[in-house]
View (cartoon, each protein chain N blue to C red):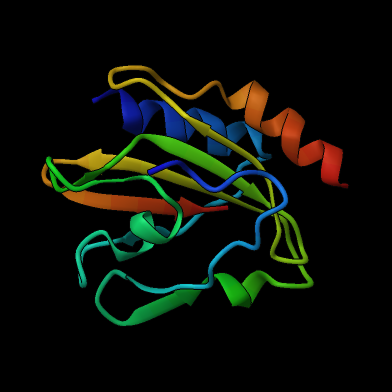
Length: 50
Length: 83
């Protein structure tokens, strides 16, 4: 499996932030560039957008 | 661990902009799979970074070897290219 390459459409996603909030990639569409970073904390997969 | 420090440094270099920390856990690894960075054998995501423009198009992607820290300057340079 290879990571998405430049030119590919970034798949939208909705994920929880803490307990009560959710964030979607589409929240930023048309407004901000997004840096999506994957890294592993313990045994979960986490991402950050900024 | 080093990831906390590297992301704090990165956020500061972005002008102190805070960023949301998301959990890709339910369903496990679904977003990592969508981006092609899920390691099925280990049940973890590959350490990787994607720069996505305002049209939702991937403009830069990089997978990092385990134990390495993404270079914030490299990512910032990619973001600056987008304007």
